[in-house]
Length: 126
Image (tube, rainbow, N blue to C red; front, side, top):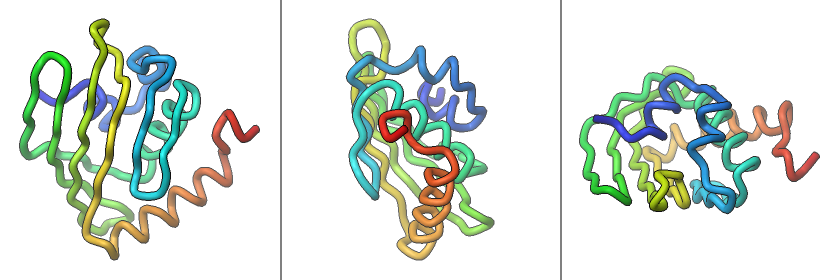
């Protein structure tokens, strides 16, 4: 069973994504760290538009944490990743770390995310 966050990245729903996040949610990405429900939710929704065809390959989980290994694609290029998540006692995401490889595809993903963020900036930057 995939984590709630991976499920939402496969089929983005901004309202459900916002409800999943704690107020002080933190997200660590290959580019930068982000904090706060609005920014993290916005960023995750944009990631879902850039990284597609997410297929979990392995998951390690307990009540408060999940680590999901997955295959995905960015602009038709294969990508492998690991998403590590921690949840609070209410089941809300408090911290997530995303790691991606290979580097060539990561560069494509970073460029696509930069374009997405330029078109639709983070709420805190508005």
